Length: 405
Figure 1 (cartoon, rainbow, N blue to C red):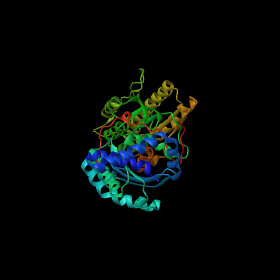
Figure 2 (figure 1 turned 90 degrees about the horizontal axis):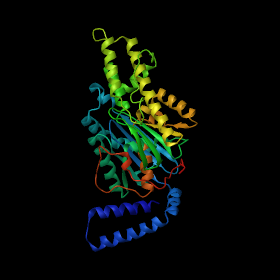
Figure 3 (figure 1 turned 30 degrees about the vertical axis):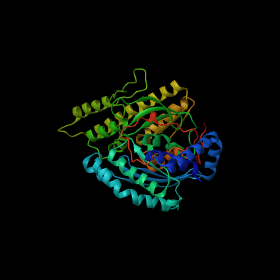
């Protein structure tokens, strides 16, 4: 069923051993001959892969959430499990990398068993393993990479390291109405804020990015200044619904000049200045706190919305997707919907549970690349910093939710 991909995996793995034995050379040679035939008849191979389907186990351990999922290219998402470490890190007010890694070690295997049971399959039914290999916390990434690579080796199946942000970018493909290519993607999370033109899987053009703090990071830091509970971003957004977003004239950074880059550090400074001016004996009144939260959120949302509008005008693409943790923000979703529809376009986003880190997006992204014959070698390698535009393209994608080329 998955012979094409497994043959490519075998070739890569054998080359990695650098053996000089006669049987090694003969086997590699035969694999390469076969792969040349495959490349000459790729369309028929794609049809064959689509007909049989590919079942992939996805592992996400890049930060403070352990996500495990099973994805079938014929039937879609079969199962997913998610464990959040919020309670572990709450007393510290932020993610402690060592604690995150240890918790991933404890939770990964039990969640794999739960996901397989929910999907009604065993490990022998899997056709491949996908795991997040970057960007992220290096210790946390190594946990998922070690589990994924070792399990694949034990099963004799191919494995692939997936780019965390590509997972987010492709998360809307898990929905019933996925966007056709090309589209403009707003990747907005605690660690990244980027605008990307997406012409296909692996065909990415960076249009703009944050020059300092990511939008999600700015949300969390502003919330911490106001003494809100961890995680700060969702707490600030909730508080903002009770405040007056016009009371304070928050700036809209870098919107008074051309370009698609972002900057949110100035908003933190403005927030800090307001808190110091309004606090009495170090205590901020509830009304002031709500109005600051509302003004801060409005400034971030307006800035993101304006830059998305510019990106759509610049590229001529009328489809916009929102992905990443901040993509769950209700006000942002609504404002971008209005912006896109005013331009005769449409906005797409994953369900809220797939905006944050999850295994489903990794399983989907990995399935696309494994089905296209891509795989990782036997090395357990992670990349804490990894530009999205460095990824190789996928010529053809497969899945229950077909996307237009």
